[in-house]
Amino acid sequence: MEGGLPAARARNDILRASKRFGRATWKQWSGYHARSRIESRMRCFKSFDERIASRDPDRQTPEVHIRVALMDRFNALGTAEIKRVA
Image (cartoon, rainbow, N blue to C red):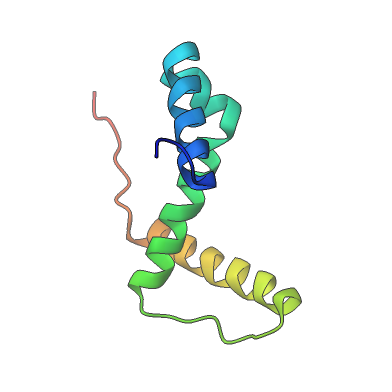
């Protein structure tokens, strides 16, 4: 049963589109890069073994934004500043 399930049809459509238009064009068109950045940020968030405390979706959004801003600040503090010496 080839492509009978909705997930299989969606996968096949994605493969056809990326083959026809090229992978780079497909990634731009589908918003793949934004999704990838969000997934990597959530992986960082989960690597600290933190959970979202709020149950209400309206409160979860600011909570995640605050935690991500803190992670960004900590990363900036720990990143070496490299200067070129002539």
